[in-house]
Amino acid sequence: MNPLQSQLHSTITVPLYHQLHQLLALDSLIFEAMRDVARRRGFAFEVPTSSPENAKKHQEIEGLLDRYQTVLKRQGLFFDLVEEIYTQLKNQGLDVLADRVLNLVASGFKDGLGIRLIDDCSWGIEWQILGGTDAGPITRPVVVVVYKSDWGPVVPWQVVQYLSSGMSLYRQKNYSTALALLSIAVEATLRDILSTRGYVFNPSANKVDIYEYTVAKVNVSGNGYAVDFVDHLLEPAGNLAVAASGAVPIEIAIRREIHPSNKRVDLHIKAPRYLIDHWSTAQIEKAAQPKNIGGLGSALNIARVDEGLITSTDLPPDVDGVLKAVRNNLIHLSSDSMDNELPQYASLSPSGKFTVRDFVSNPGMVYDLVVEIPQFVNEQYVKLWRAGTKI
Image (cartoon, rainbow, N blue to C red):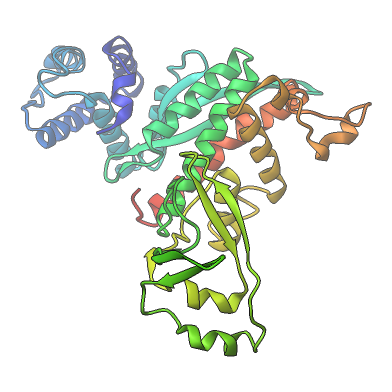
């Protein structure tokens, strides 16, 4: 299902259709396109046999786009019809008219956002991003591909929502919140592309092997202690002197250790390497999960260095540090976090201290990320789609 279909109400689609058939002046092509779409959707639409019927047929199509959308399962009918009209125009070599279809659909902007058909018959959201330069204000379009009918979702809708909310907040000049949401979209994108290589995100995953406990009994022997191990798979005690090259008794260090999660107090033993096989089993209880993603920094490093999934063209390496600083300080927000320094920009500040607060107060820096992050996100998902990889 095209998630964009819930974003266009009939109060928008019906006037757009009215503009469309007036712009094209190709009644027969539009009716044939509607007939083909109706057949695929399982309802009837008859192509008129004479031109006097055309006006009523256009009204019939407007009714199909307007009424009983949910009851008759016609959500997204406008998208199907426009896509079919565009395809037939291209097939007939009417490229100029086909381009007009693209421009018409992209013209329905509200608050800098529009829904448009892209020339590869995918559907996307387009934002008009207003920024400033030394030469004056500029508006730059940013497009994210959301859906393709013969494939399905391209950029996941939940990621699009973060991008869209970030863009809306940027327009309201709520720069810090906008960048926080956009950084979440970057992290979600990296997790998705890494999932295609078998990576998972599990905050509680162990990075190293966890071994089974070895059971021992502690007894009193005179003024000392005697430790008797129950596990008979351990190295025999008689071999310890050989392993220690005769350097017995062996000194070990023991200290109390408090587990932060449950406040349980245990004993932590620090011992020579050769004592390990005598006092503990090599049986693994829980194997390490090496393909586990930590935070944004970990995801960037794995995607760029370990897997080679993103290149310097996709995202310049120097931007990694900026994204991590922005994400970590804005997601884990406090007054102190806003005052954390970004040393790479120290030369921009007379005091030599350029902070996160300075960054989010700099319209040019914010504009760069607002424009570039959606494009980065879009490019990564489009690469997966073109490679035939579904998320």
